[in-house]
Length: 480
Ligand code: ADP
Ligand code: GLC
View (cartoon, rainbow, N blue to C red):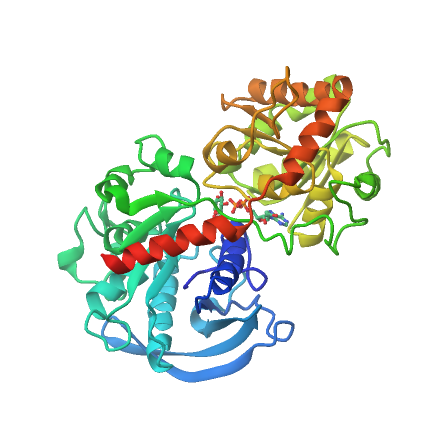
């Protein structure tokens, strides 16, 4: 498995959660998996016990060889290798600078990484049955297998699988890098790499991978349409049955209120006592009015347009003015949203708390201590936080899109069934009304709320099922 993120070494979002946990689940099914990652300067070598593994590794880029080295570590029995290239990965961020500008040489950085990962397999004598690549960053791996390694004694038999975690990010870069990436102009056509005169790395992967999947069945359907495919729907449709949706699994070793070491008190479905403690501590930590009877709505999110936080920005002030409710927001990303949510607590003291930045610990506190978890995403390939929320009895309030729609069951006010609250229209008033519905349920239908919490906590979105679906996809790729 070759990827640009993997929890706990390097994480900016859910890709890291998946690459961190799927290999472990596959090993439990009896497969041997190795994971190859870039060694960003942010990877803490000492904490994770990285060992020098191989040096030098010669990688052909364009018509010259470049050199890198590899380190190794272990994660729950899975061997993890890191490609070290100071030139490409000794930087502030994974993909962009502190001002959120993409690094201009991203095509080169991740093209180099992907080729280096394949070279590492060859140099260490590893013969994969499946090469599993993720998103645009490593999509070229599928092309390299077919173009360069079809005859290779070690890589020649490998089949490739590409997982798309977010179709909006395609790795579209200037064609000036095309030859450096080791691609021939004969393949610079609109069905492969060419996209309005530029290189589209994800598109190339969609063409060359033996199987392609995305991270929920609904998102697989949405991406097949012009509205949801960000320009790639025709190419996904061209893959027919070789493009499927497999829901992400949650790693309940990390996200489990019964054992979570990061939260103030543990709790379970049978004994919710600790959840009240978590709520009180959360209120204290975010300087909210400490009151067990006011519902707390949590948000943990990248602050990006995808996540629909503009809708929240357009309605949060009215909500705290009109309703008895508190908000806690943890997020980082876009400047405008960071500034807006960062300055809200000063304007609504005791009612809104926020932390702009990245904090693993706070994300667990919010999952555990909130009553509701809000994800108003405009689109959501899978979404993991709503799945974690369910396990913590924190009912999701979500827009009915992609994986959010697949994993949250709508509240039925007559029966008290469901696991959350969903809205369809991507606008601030739909969000406002749905939060109002959740808040009124909190005050007026306590029995329903408890029943929903218990139903939510009993949901099983572990990797068990999904890892088996990946296994079936791998077998299918091998049979092609
Ligand atoms: P996406 O990958 O689109 O960001 P997901 O819901 O799949 O969305 O995954 C997000 C992951 O990143 C979750 O594990 C979430 O807890 C984590 N996360 C996002 N923002 C932060 C943050 N500011 N601090 C800590 N964790 C965060
Ligand atoms: C992407 C998507 C998110 C998904 C994650 C892991 O970041 O935005 O919905 O859960 O990848 O697959």
